[in-house]
Image 1 (cartoon, rainbow, N blue to C red):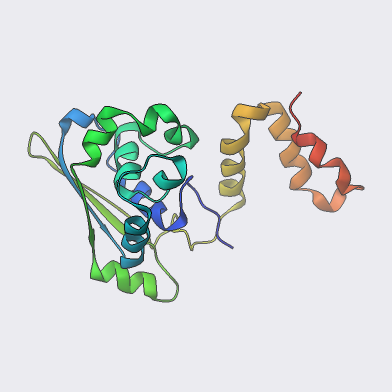
Image 2 (image 1 turned 60 degrees about the horizontal axis):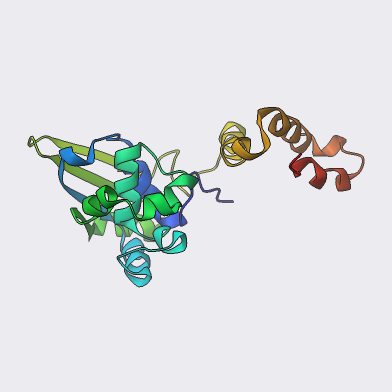
Length: 193
């Protein structure tokens, strides 16, 4: 079972994770960025178009996701709102990002177990070289998830809407399903008061 640990298309998550390892950075301090990925990620990105105007297109855009992760420290649901999609600074940074295939990463993706590897190399305006790598470790999309990671993802997707107390009650119920007398009682727990 794969559980995505960031809100994007699965094959783009390693790009986000690699960028997070050198983030956050001020977009004005970034001269150029090279993103090395496996071939299939490039195919998905190129098929979706290189100028995302919608949330759905942005899910596939490696430059968009990397630019957001580099400047904000991560990618969250708010990364796909209209303000982010049209942000001139984010758009300018996207133009300084090059996406290339790394043959070693393609072989790792095609292997068993599958690995989603990415390397993000940032050259700052001051000449500093920053490198973040992801994939093939516990954060890899193919890696099993712990209960703590699953709970963290659930909280991240629900607490802003439902509140921490309600989420805690839901989690307690879901982690103890064997004790639930009537599963029809679960859906109302997700309703907004």
